[in-house]
Every structure is written in C-alpha cells, then in structure tokens.
Image (cartoon, rainbow, N blue to C red; front, side, top):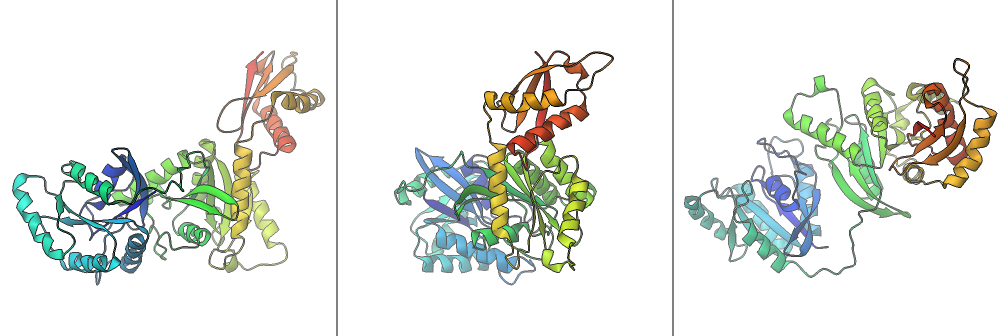
Amino acid sequence: MSLVAIVGRPNVGKSTLFNRLVGMRQAIVDETAGVTRDRHYGKSEWCGHEFSVVDTGGYTSNSDDVFEAEIRKQVILAIEEADLILFMVEAQTGITDYDAEIADILRRSNKPVVVAVNKVDTGDKMYDSYQFYSLGLGDRLFSISSATGGGTGDLLDEIVRLLPPDSGAEDDHPELPHIAIVGRPNVGKSSLTNALLGTERNIVTPVAGTTRDSISTYYNKFGHEFMMVDTAGMRKKSRVHEDLEFYSVMRSIRTIEHSDVCILMIDAQTGMEAQDMSIFNLIRRNRKGCVLVVNKWDLVEKSTNTMKEYTEALRARLAPFNDIPIIFTSVINRQRLLNVLEAATTVYANYSRKIPTSELNDKMLPEIENWPPPAWKGKYVKIKYVTQLPTRFPAFAFFCNLPQYVKDPYKRFLENRLRDLFGFTGCPMEIFIRKK
C-alpha cells in the first residue's frame, strides 16, 4: 500500500489533518507545539483508493526541545520510506526558516511533494498562500483548513493522482493478534519495540513520558506475525499534571482494551510497585493475555538463586492470577528478547484456544467426581455438564442442580484444573455456574 508522509514545522496542524484523513482521533492534538514525537501510522481511503498515512513530529533545529534531534531523525526516516510527501505550512505565519530548511530537504529527496497551506479558514486568507510558490515545490498549492475540512477534497484528489498504483503485494491484516507493550514511564517499552523491529521506530530518551501516542507497527520476523503497539507510560492520576499526559494515559488504557495480549514491563531495580499492580489489574479486568517482562536485569546484583527468588516474590504479589510467563531481559544488551516474542505468541495461542465440548466433559467430569463441591446445609451440588462459551477470552459454563451453593474457592479449583489439563498460561479465565 502506498505511503503518504505529512511533514512540516511544529504546530501547523499536521496531526489535525492526519486525524481527518484516517477518520478518527488517532493522534493527540493540542495547542502546545511539539506534541507529536514519534511517527504515527493510519489508513485513509478516497474515491476507492486506499493508502497509508504517517504523521511526524514538527521539524525544528537549534530549539530548546530536548527531543529535537530525535524528532528530526524520525522526519527524515518518514521522508525516505514515503511514496509521497505532504508538506504542510501555515498561511498566517508565512515562510519561516524551518519551512525553507524542510523545502530544501524535500527538493533533494526526488519524491513527489504536495504543498498544503493550512489554516485558510476564510477567503481573504487565500492571498497569504501564494508566497509559498517561492519554495520551488511544484506549480500548484492547496489552501486547506484541516480543522474544518475545507479544501481537503481537492488535496486528496491530487494525492491519489500522484501516488503509484498499488502492487497488491501487501494486504491488510485485521485478524492478526494485537500485542500491546505497557508499563510505567521509562521502563524501556520503546527500546523493546525498537530492538524487536531492528529500526529506530520510536524515540527513546532518558526523559520519562517521551512516548505520547500509542504507536502501532506491523511485525513479521522470526516466524512471528502480529501488530505491536507501544504505549505511553501510565502513572497515578495525582502525578499527571499536563493535559497531554492525561490524554496519553487514556490512549494507553484504550490500547489495552483493544489488544489481545499485553506485555507488561517493569523495572528490575524497583520491582512490582503499586502502579505496576494497577496496570496489571487493568489487564486482568479487561480479560487480556499477559506476559510479565522484568527489564534492566543486568543492573541487579545476583547470587545463585536471585532469579528464582525474584520470580517467587512476583508470583506471590500477583496471586491469585499468577499463572503468567515471567521473562527477565536487558533490552540494552539484547538479552532474551526472542523469549518475549515466543511467550507472547504462546499466550495468544492459549487466549484464542477453543476446546471441544466432548473433550472438556471427558476430562473435567472425572475431576469433579473425585473432588465434588462441598455440601451446603445438607444439600449436595451435582455438576453434570461443562462447555466453553463463545467469548474472545477463555470462559466456561458449568451446569449443575444448585448453582447458588458453588462458592468462589471451588470456582478457583475448577479454574486450576482447567489450567493444568489444557494449558491456559498467561490468560485470565472466567467460570460461570448455571442451572442445568
């Protein structure tokens, strides 16, 4: 599928236009300059033509932004991989030094460029757009308003006309598993994404909160194929001061809700803190598969049984849902990264497993007969039948004569027997007791 990159200096409306093109509020938009940092991908459709769109951070130089060099690198990467560049400028401000610098890069890129003059909300502002012909990027400008959608139809017509025809080699993968990398700020989520992809996909700095958007990437290496989503770090509400960070945290929560498996990263030096437990409980409440990754393991002083003791302490903290893979990694040293992929793939296989009803009854009914539910006030509970429910996560219904007398401890016994017999490691499970 053809790729269109939106580039420009900060605060000219790139993310607003990106959201309009993909038809959803996918990129964070705020009046603050420099909100977008990573490349952000989406899909657009116009007159029967589908193409991918990438939103980039605002290109700057010699500014006070600590992310300036990384953002500039991301913009250059987006220009290199795009089939067409949509260069956004602003009518009211006119040509700035940044605009001239970007135009110089684009002229040397030998890629088709479309210039969009944004914030032309009224007819009298149309005259402000003619000055941009001096940038030497084609003989046609498009005056638009990304906020209201004015002029975007003509712009899309030109984009579709200039894009190369689709090869048909790459298809959409809606049925692929969605694996989200979540955790507190600065535990190494973006570093893990970059290490697995083998490219500088997301910006990585020592500053907590660098990633703001949830960045989705198609992954197809080492026999694994899925959509990988890097999210913003989530912290307590009382410590979220910026509106931007609030939106980032909300977007991370939405990413968990729409994922299949979550890779929860924690810092080996600090261990499983209260905020890590909050994120874990969010994953469990949303019934998502989970892999726990203990990063920065190279910084921990070790003895003979350090890893075993650390694992036992984590499982005690996570109880009762502690049947999850725990991987100790050092992303910087590339330690056990493939183990993370294999664990996530295994958890997804468990998460989507459907067990035939006959097999369930053949194996579970003898277990129930050997350890029946406790009698309640002289009344005996008899479970006669079990079946898996057609839910996205593992859920089972047990039919009996007196469902009201089956208590939580026995439900946990049934869950543990299902895990032992069928292997649902990493997946939360729901047990329903129904009247036969």
